[in-house]
Length: 174
Image (cartoon, rainbow, N blue to C red; front, side, top):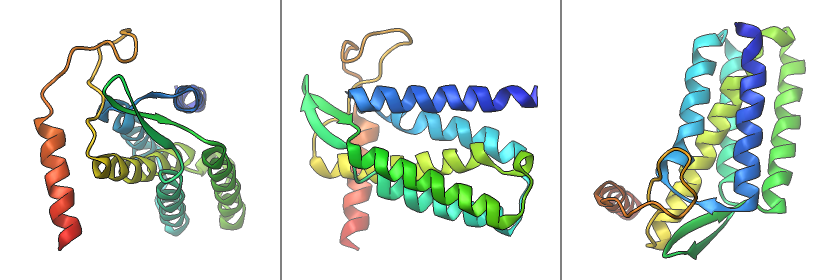
């Protein structure tokens, strides 16, 4: 079963990138879901050591940088995101740096925590993009049911988003 994980991860990442490049409503589940799934898989399969930690730190930093590059805009009354060419450039540089870390570390290819690296990178992106979105003061997109078209879900209570916005503003002031 371990040999199927790279295929699953590749499909997840390609799906996320394509959806975000085309443009999609920005909601918490779509923003934080992929990193959480990939982190869970990656942590359970990782061989921990100095190079794994270095790779995680680098991935988090590149992800945070990448989170500055998508275009945020309002459509249908809520936030949407769209990847830009800058986003793709940061993805490419991040992949090259992580490949270099893997080579320098001397870790065998099967021991490199690629799923963990991608998950940490997507988490960095989600955190930065989430803070940018909160800073706009515009509402996040409502959650939608599985298989439901983007932007067609009924409004859901935004108390969680409002609480997060309040916490971010308090944290920024302190």
